[in-house]
Amino acid sequence: MPKITFADADGDTRTIEANVGDSVMETAVRNGIGGVVAECGGSLSCATCHVIVDEHDFASLPPMEEMEDEMLWGTAVDRTGTSRLSCQIRVTEDMDLRVTLPETQV
Amino acid sequence: MGENGLLIVGSSQAGVQLAVSSRALGYAGPVTLLGDENHRPYQRPALSKDFLQDKITKESLIFRSQEFWDEHRITVVKGERIEKIVTAPDGAGTAWSASGRAFPFDRLALTVGARARRLDVPGAGLDGVLYLRNADDALELKARTAGAERVVVIGGGFIGIEAAAGLHALGKRVTLLEFADRLVARAVGTETSRFLLDHHRRAGIDIRLGSAVDEIVGHDGKVRAVRAGGEEIAADIVLVGVGVIPNTELAEEMGLRCDNGIVVDHHAVASDGTTLAVGDCANLPNPVPGSCAGERVRFESVNHAIEQAKVAAHALLGRQEEYGGIPWFWSNQGDLKLQIAGLSSGYDRTVVRSPADPLKHSVLYYRGDRLIAADCVNVPLDFMAVKQALTRRVTLPPDAVADPAVPLRSLLAEAAAPHEGNLS
Ligand SMILES: Cc1cc2nc3c(=O)[nH]c(=O)nc-3n(C[C@H](O)[C@H](O)[C@H](O)COP(=O)(O)OP(=O)(O)OC[C@H]3O[C@@H](n4cnc5c(N)ncnc54)[C@H](O)[C@@H]3O)c2cc1C
Ligand code: FES
Image (cartoon, rainbow over all chains, first blue to last red; front, side, top):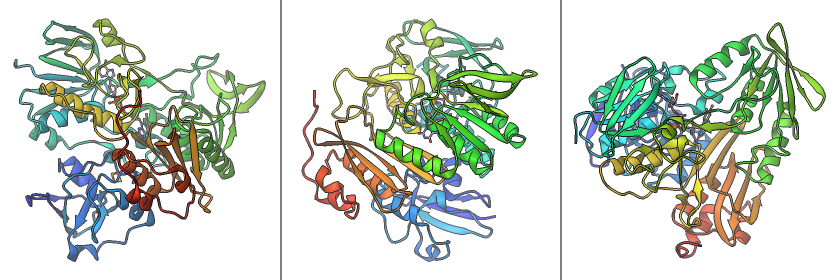
């Protein structure tokens, strides 16, 4: 099963078994990862599902679209080189993704 | 604290957030999240967007997993419609459902939302006249859409336009009738109305403004056409999106003050001093910094339901918390992603940034020289910059924003010191 490990801003981690086809955001929210707010429910409208992807994992993800890139300029905590909006990352077979949550989303 | 805890009536955006925030803030008593729908708590916005177009499944609308509710000791009750509530002066009481069950509580929250306003013309009761407020409505619309070729949408607000765009993308012949002389007149300015109109007409939706529906014409009890302005427009189904009415009946029977929603204070507390009311059903003092004293608003947005629920969760724990953030809204309409930051009501000046791309549009609203809101279509950069400017209470100078080549983000960085307190 695909796995996603969420590290919060304090460094506490939780690993969740995810379903192929769900987004990383959905995986986080349904399982109560508080650091992902996702106000718009994955509509790519709110930028409150910001995650910072582990540097090694970042390159393995499909590249982001322009709209996501633009939205990332408005995150509550400034974007880093490996920032993504988690609603735009689809869980794939054999995924073993590590992401860090920003201190705040709003 | 008694042992009955918090009863939340209405298990949608506001109710879910209140339950979650109450726990997160440390509320220790039992929490019951009760709703009348026969679905696990789900999100509505996609009902008129991706869900209508079969791009996502019902499962992805669900707010939280059952494990989450269990872990947080939140009891989710489905399919129980509350019909009567009695409270004592300390706020404790009992709610009774239509099925006869009693739900005692120490503290009550009404997150009962709003319902679709019904069309009031002859023929409105015909089979095939549909609405879109909840999952059952959406499932019925989807089921009916399959066999329909011609759809008439009545109402050019967000839901009407979103559904029209979605149905058009599914290959239906769509006519949209709007009574007013422009689209979404309640929420956007004339420039944005015009932009949306031009785009959706170009895309192939037959939009008629100033169109008053006289009658839904039927055959054998089924919809056949819509008659508006003396003309008959053939229709296999009719979708009505003419606004919503806040569900205030329970509150009224409880003796709570209601006026276009359940009247609450800054902390989401109703007129009895204990009952909380949150979301689409609540009428609150305008929370936007700098708004006029005494001005009241009722929002119909996800962002509001979330922010006000957080305030209410604090109130539950006896704390007074400020309403956070700047109101914002989104609407996806076919190829268009509209994002609105702030409230434009009361503007006296607009500045349109006109990017060369015909699919993009943004307009900034000013009151005096103070930036108060923006509508942005397919320009998340502008939306984000305005939202941040409003959050930090800085103005982007009107003369400088007109040039679409200048990124608003750069103006934001230069922006001057915050402006002072209330206008009023
Ligand atoms: C099709 C559609 C698209 C939308 N798109 C967007 C969008 O893009 N962006 C955005 O910001 N907002 C959007 N909205 C608005 C947003 O969904 C609402 O603002 C939000 O759902 C309000 O949440 P609420 O919990 O206050 O009320 P509601 O969502 O109305 O929930 C109230 C719940 O209480 C239940 N209830 C009522 N009375 C009783 C009773 N007596 N007993 C038990 N249960 C009861 C109702 O059945 C309902 O489940 C959309 C709404 C719809 C319908
Ligand atoms: S959930 Fe809103 S942008 Fe990802």
